[in-house]
Length: 234
Picture 1 (cartoon, rainbow, N blue to C red):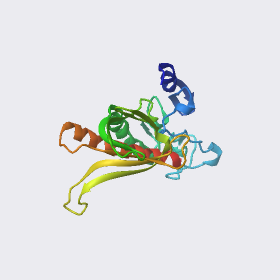
Picture 2: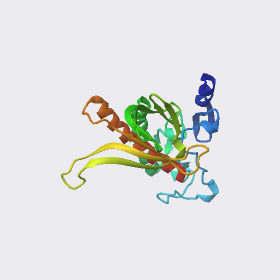
Picture 3: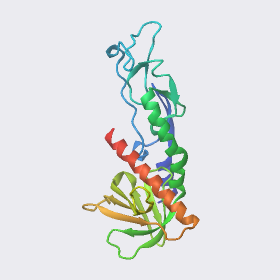
Picture 4: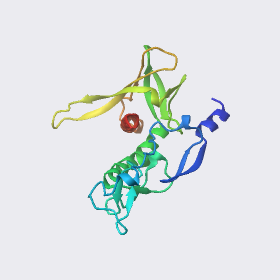
């Protein structure tokens, strides 16, 4: 990929919406697959009362819209301002209590797990019908759109094309048992190919820092795919 194409994929612009300032991709096609679209606000005329506590809106009880769900609430029920990175807001924005709780949980992904994915980890990689696995570094691209596999060969897998994920484990799930992640199997649709292709990532067998990094990467990727599926359901 040329540096010019890479720069265009990662270019951002600042836009203002009714909900606040957002730093979004310059080209919508290059947006993060984990992102969410801003919701349509419930029209003021359709919400004479708070949609949480049923308080009647008047001169003293003002109405506010949650920036995540778009519903209408009083200040008591929608007074928290919380970061909403999946919608690319620059500053924390007003959210109802339910949405604020979800956004707080997602903040852990952006503060911790996303950094793990961007840093990458080493795996034995089996791609498609390949019989012999190859040692490769697997990481998420800076714009969060691609899974990059780099070793003797190099591959890019578009995150949005991943259709199924299974974490591979060993151990005993029963009470008192010890289960650990050993790898991950992903199904994805390769451009121009019929059906799906399988990608299998297997962590090394040693107990070194490299193995710990691989295990942390698998956990972060599992969380990332959950966010991906949630984005598709919006």
